Length: 227
Image (cartoon, rainbow, N blue to C red; front, side):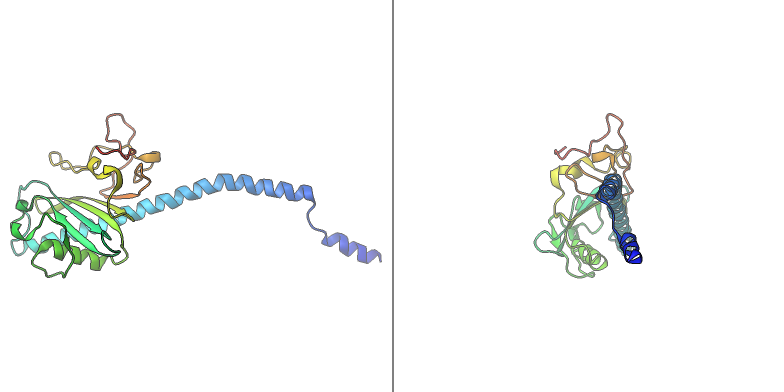
């Protein structure tokens, strides 16, 4: 009988007080760790978006280089041209491409200011060919807005926002490539003190990466109001 009660005593669980203490400790740890983990998740998304923007930039450069070999690339000393690529505007996975300042290209008649849908890589209309090229290389992108700034046959800057077919709040009018200094704006005030986060909550990948800068007078990307 004594051994029986000893076994019962050995098997008893936590007391109510002990359970309360354990729960309190878990609550404190959760309050500390969850925000930290969320920060890591957000930062990983920004890093991924920046990486995608860089890959898109490299691919557009490769496309322009191919055109250069047949004298259909950008004119040297040309003004900045902007390529706007929309993914999922009408249906998930649909790619369209519009180009500003077609006259910046030697083969200007085959660069269209209107949004042209992807067809094949060999299409004579370069918008369509570029959209097809990118669609083939990035099949995982189903909805996105991509803006690339080009000058003199080279891609200088790319913005990439995944998950939206149009960048909300006119944010891309704030993030523009400087034609005069050939750089992004000198620093930026991003939302939540985190580079790559717009005030709308959207994650914007940039190549080259635009860091966070709280200095007064810098472009404020934390607001969703149009510039």
